[in-house]
Length: 392
Image (cartoon, rainbow, N blue to C red; front, side, top):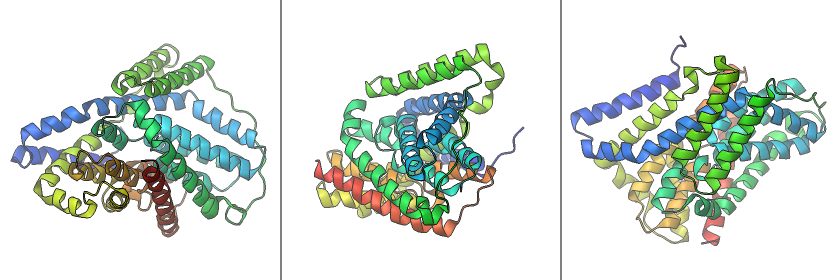
């Protein structure tokens, strides 16, 4: 049996703390029930989409795509950079940021080893874009699901509203990635030798998983409820694995830590908000519905995310933003999505990414991580929020 990691204990501790608050009356039963009812569809989605992503990776879809990208780039680092940015951004936007952190990071690092090139440019591409490319669809980030419900937008309407901020954020991230990690002075090489093509070991599994991902994204874009389309696609993929590769189906596919973490976090944040946090957060964010108020909310969301974590930062901010201030709420969303790339605890995706880097033997220079992350977070925040304000 696998030993519990630090992140496992954090998730369990948060959940138990939430139960303690409930048992002692600090969190009223009615509020706890309302919180759980609100996040229940989100938990169904999270569990299903992670299973879908894990089995898609098991079928070799991500590996095949990654190797084909390196071949398509033809040994050019410039072309490889553009393709890797697109790959990470699309994965984040369509399958969510935790998928990019958990599944794309080891794929990118494996590609770096195969090409005999430095791993950090590829690793930083995944961790930054896991956060900064998570504005487009409701599925891209848990905070998006909460915001979409709060501002009463359908999935297509949300995507249309956040498309330009997403593009601005990804463009700013790409510029910082090239400046800090990808340019010739940083990578130390002019060209690389493209590898041989990767082939899936089971074409049926590969085809079904690829089709399921396409159907999933199509369902999201057309407005099919997430708690329906994600478990259906995951169930179809699991059924095919049951018939063709039963050994791949294991309890470890279920993201229990993520589900326990999210549930505990919302119970704890609800309790703390009821006992003073809301007043502090309101003083920081304010209630100005105009452009300055939107920028203030975005900055507060980014700052609180790096002090605490982006999920409690968004939940606490949402509770104090007036219901009618939709633009201010979307500004807060931008801050909590693109801002948490300065410190490792700012988002769960960054913590998951660090775990993958450790297991792959990749050393992270934290001083450089913090410095470049701060500059990139600021650039993405200004770009995405500016576009949001201009198109209002």
